[in-house]
Length: 482
Image 1 (cartoon, rainbow, N blue to C red):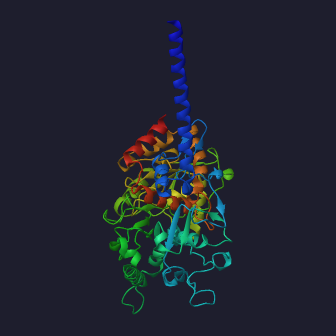
Image 2: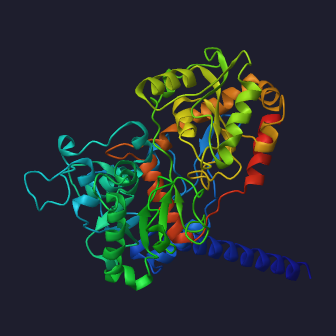
Image 3: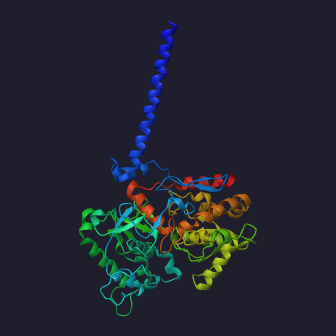
C-alpha cells in the first residue's frame, strides 16, 4: 500500500511539472509571436490595437522619488527617457507610427501666406526644408501662439528628407491608399490673423476666399468623397479660424486649442486633438530655474482683464486680490515689452494664474509651464493637451470658478500649499516642459511628436480617455492636502 501511495505522489508531481513547463513554453511562444510584428502571424494593425488597449492611460509618477515611470509605447512619451525614442534622418515607412498623405495645395494656402514665392521656381510648391536658411520664418507676437499648422507641415515635409534627423513617428506617404490619415496643409490661423479683414474695394476677405476654395478643392477629391473627410486632419487652432468652412468638417479630425466656440456636432473630445499653444516667453532650462526662495512673488497674472463669456471672472478676481502684497495682477499686452515683463514676472513667481478668457484656454498656461511657475487653472470647461497621458494634477492646480471668486478663498488656498508640495510640482514641471515645445526639426517627445502620438491614439481608439473635470479637481485637492 505504501508503494502504491508513493507511486501516486510521484505521478502527481510529474504531471504538475509537465504542466508548468508547458505553460512556460506557451507564454514564451505567445510573447515571441506578438513581438515580431510584420513577420508574425498576427497582423500589424491587430498587434497595435492589442498593445494600445493594454497600456495604462497615463504616465505614472512615483511621488516618493519624483521620477516618472513611463509605461510601454505608444503611451510612453517622456523626453527624459531618451531610450524610448529614435531620431533618424532616414525614416522607414513600415516602422512609422502614423502614415500621412498630404495634399499638394498651392503655396497660397500655406507658405505663400508667409511671403514665400518659391526658390526661383514659380511652380515650386514646398520650400527646401533640408536647408534652414530657405525655410520661411513664422511671424512672432500673438501670431506665434497659434502656429501649430506651421510646425506640423514642416515636420511632414522633413520626414522624407534624408538630411533631417527627427523622430520616426509620422511619415509622409505618396499614395493616399497607404495612409492612416490625410493631412490638409492650410495655415488657417495665420490666414485669419493676417487676412480676415476686407481691404479697399474687396468684396470679401482673402481668408474667406481661401476657405471657400479649400472646401471646393476637398469636395472634388476622391480621398474626401470616400469617407466624407472622416480620415482627414485639419488644423484650426485659432478659435476664430475656419469660421466659414468648419461646418463642412464635422467628420474630420481637427487640431484645436479648445472646444469653446464649436458646437459638439463639429468638434468634440471623441475625435479631435487639443494641441498646446506655442509659448511666447523664454523657456527656462531645468538647471536654470529659480528656486522656491528665489521666487519672491506668490501669484502672477498679466493680460487682458476685461473679457467676454467665461472670461468675466478675470475682472472679479482682479478686484479681489490685486492689492495683496505678494500678488502681481495687472493688465498687459503681447507687445515685445509686455512679453519681457511677463517672462520676468513668471520666473519670479511661485504660482501663475491661468484664467478663462473669451475661450476656455489661454496661452498663459504654456508660458507658465515654460517658466516652471506652477499653473493655477481657473477655467471650468477647459480641455488640455495630452491629458490622456499626462496627469496635470501633478504639476498644476485646478480651482473651480465658483470657489475662486469667494472672498479670501484663493489666497488662503495658495498660501496653504506647503513648500515641499510646491517643490514636488516644480520638479515635475521641469521634466514635462519639453513636451510643450514646438521646434524644427522636431525632437522625440516635443509638442510636434506628442501631437502625432495623440493623432495615433485617436485613430486606434476612436475616443478620448481623458479624466473628467470632477475627477481632475478631486485628484488635485487630494494631492495638495496629502
